[in-house]
Length: 219
Image (tube, helix red, strand yellow):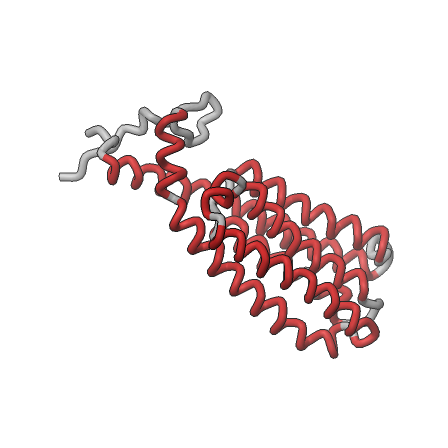
């Protein structure tokens, strides 16, 4: 018969799933291998997607094809350097995990926003490349071990950056562009909300599994 595990080591009046300091340190150390593996895997995927999707730039924004690839090259370079850091300096990577991973995901999204700004009205990238931010959100909330606060900050900051660029740089707040902007914002905001829920569910399951594996769970 299955017995319910008490989550007494979790603390926090706001209902967040947090351990006390000692158990939290042990939990984070146990995640080191998984954090590093997931980080490298998503970095490889990001490089492939950034480079592969760049093939469409010839049609997506033909007027700024070279400039778009300059942005892509910069993002790919930073991604590869961060992978080197994670493999060569695992202790530092774990210590600065939130800052490193959060900054990298923000950089991926900022690169997409920058490429969009290079496009001209009527080009495919002008109102369609926002979909790249959806891919970033998928990875942000499902492939990282960021805290909900950090993940939300990164996710919603990218959405705000896109809206700001669309309003000020592309003048999408007027005419037909406004309809496209509203639709894009709806999907971006929805992706963040769904991501937050999925992150919370996964975090609770991961912590309960850790309790069981470490013998901390109580019947």
